[in-house]
Image 1 (cartoon, rainbow, N blue to C red):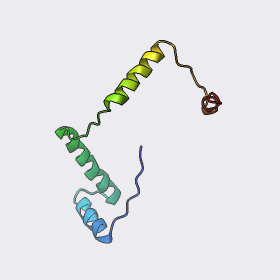
Image 2: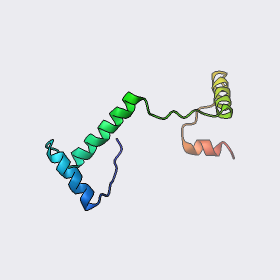
Image 3: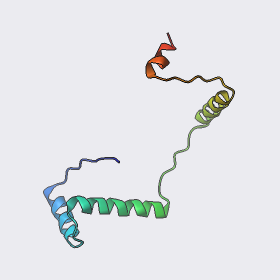
Length: 87
């Protein structure tokens, strides 16, 4: 779960609170409702952006996966072990 802190003007808060009263919602619940409806719409319209990786990144990723399958990788238990391996 992600928490968000939001600052609204008095006018914005009053408008949202007034709108929420129609549904019996307080201000935080009204804001969550609006966000959920916007998210639902984005999912239905398939407007969620898809970011493709570059060819170079894809090549490096496939190479790393192949090396892992070949046993050329090693397990690191702690971050200190990882950085100590460079010394």
